[in-house]
Length: 439
Image 1: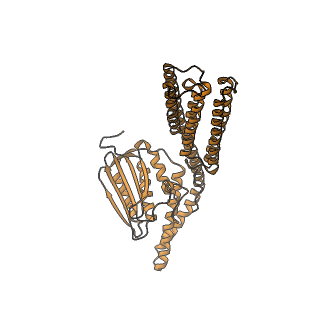
Image 2: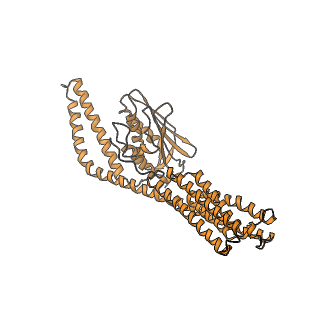
Image 3: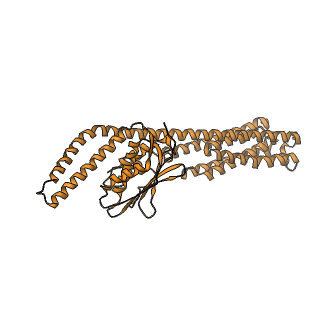
């Protein structure tokens, strides 16, 4: 059976790399614009437009702007080679904090208004890398700013040579400015990281809702197909099976004819099961739960399945008093579909195991087979549009998943993995309700 195209993944969307590249290009452009604007601001206000007496400062400003342009060109070249990396983005954030530190030094030291640029980089880090980016940017600000302010306050490092006539910053004023800058930058980093995390959660939620809408549309398509075909198919199937059974009772038939008629009956039953699965998938109903012993239900299903084993050995191990609160009819369908799926996947002469046991606060049902194993992908086996078998449709396991999900209040879960030694292993868990009566 040809499968439908896979639903879009939450972590593999074609538009994400382009969006991320555009975001980094915008940040690179903002960095360049800030360097140019701040260069002009320092000249116009801090140096009061008089460059003749501030040649050292002017050369340092040109160097800082040039270094900023060079770092941005390297960043853009990295973006052209592929999507941004976390290491490269983190290094760029640290370089930015170093550039701002140069501007802080040239525009007044610890009391410079340029210290606000540290917080701006923390915000950019949160945008590009989330909480990690905000933390890296804040750490970079501390690594550059604290040594600079400390050296200036202790007199180890003096102001630029052409700014020696400016009033020196006192120790008290430097400490106050340092505290204000660090606390302000830290607050912005924390808020930016929190906002980035909330935005990421919202984005993931939107992706999940989009995925659920796509799945709901797929189920609606299956429902329309099932509703249109089920009744048209079921009546002819019943007639074919009935006629084959009547013909099989005639004494004049040869063994070869009887074998052919048994094939007709078996395939008619398989088609009838398929129609039933389509109806269960297309028209789910709300579970009507009651307290039952799931072990007894498992034994009943295994007893029915023994007649259709077709040379496969079915082994059942059931603990007593595995009480659960479920819809008996729906869980009978779940167990039957799991066993039938195991039969379909297992060659004749191989074994199928059905085990039910009480494990602490949960009842666990395990169905194992010696078939060819599971398809790739953690959830592909429960996709109604996917089947790894030429004789199957995948709808039976989709019904299992839908019924189990409908029992979320009982913390029902279904998982599939590879069986050790080959084959598939399905594990169904549900809350054990104990011996008390439930209303």
